[in-house]
Length: 288
Length: 277
Image 1 (cartoon, rainbow over the protein chains, first blue to last red):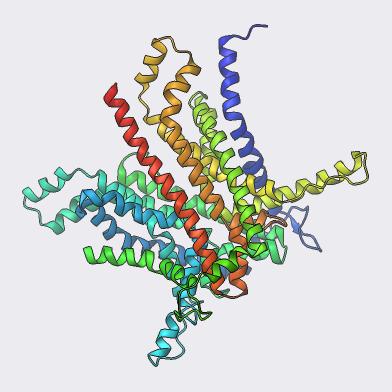
Image 2 (cartoon, rainbow over the protein chains, first blue to last red):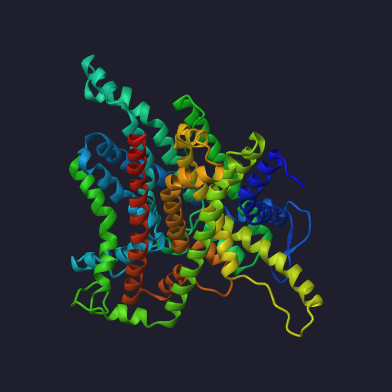
């Protein structure tokens, strides 16, 4: 039986996308559907899930309000802290730094992001722990300095972990900036400060938006940093989820929290895309 | 300004450098450098639990990154040929795979697989002819599946960006010269996207090798290297952890530097092709 050219083309296309489609369906669509179904169920007496249709799990979200409050305050604050440090650095690298060393300098910023987050967070646990910086204070005669297991320690870990991810998109948007605009602004008598606020900053806003959105979204699902540097005192939604699924085995309640977390992530993403659309005047937003 | 940027590099590298420094400390005390020693490395390398975790991590990272590179590349090529609506659905799912937090991916995979197995295992036992039916459970397969979800989407994005930047004219020229689509792919497209595929593979490997939170949920009785490190940290900080951390650091450093080198090479090569053409 002869296969027509059109059918053959279809077969090849199906063979190419098939495995990825099956993977996405089996390990993303199906599991997430299960989580949504679980969120409307009840906890079985011995833990796990038992079929039901109730909104009780969502009504109970307040029981974990501390985790939500910590996440929803420290994630945006962390992103903002990253931004405040990242912008001048990205500006220096994109505009002031010697072109010869630019690639090297930016590589040195990106590399830590791709090395183990666990090890990098551990490094701060080591530094802030009793035998680290507090020990130095002790030698100087100042006792009882507690750094670990405080919101400040978590914030420090956040900035340390996510700074590279904030620098990169801002750097890219500043690097694309047409230098002649800066010269034109100066020629027309604008001071460096008003050139910055009138030209450079508005043109780099898409990069800023990308960075803030990326870091905020990743922080909303963070687990390791609050776990290691917050020591059970400053915990995030991620920590509540680990507790509910692996310790107390309350799967339906955990599922309701997971669904809520995804809704928050999607909401942040949509708002970021809307703002980015407005500042850049195009729908083209390279969030990833 | 220059001083500020210098301070930033110090901030980024000093904590890691300190861990590396103390991994060579001969003393037990975490705040005093006594002398040089590689004893903690010796101890780490002769720790059977650590070696077992390392082996698990290598197997999982290699398998998931290979599958992600192959299927991701195939999807990137195939997506161009799909109708607009199907492609939009596919794009949505790929973005979801990247955006959904790892902790949720871990939970969802755990919940779905546990339910699936509790349904399948009795069924298998019922039809199994022997006395000892195989039991499906969490392990290598579930970690590979969950890691592969994110990394496959990552590879698809990377390869697709590269495909989009390929000149259409060079492909048209090839088919004008009577090359079959397969020959055009092998001779023209593949050599140009190969560095991106390899870079995607290395990033996928690094992600899987470093991931803690997803494996934490779906590893079953297996322990990956980050899971082992995490458990050791919770038992208390010892100099041995500094040695293990340094090993992990060096491994991911080698991978990421290779990936960055490859993506840079790509630009040079495509430049050369353009000059020839």
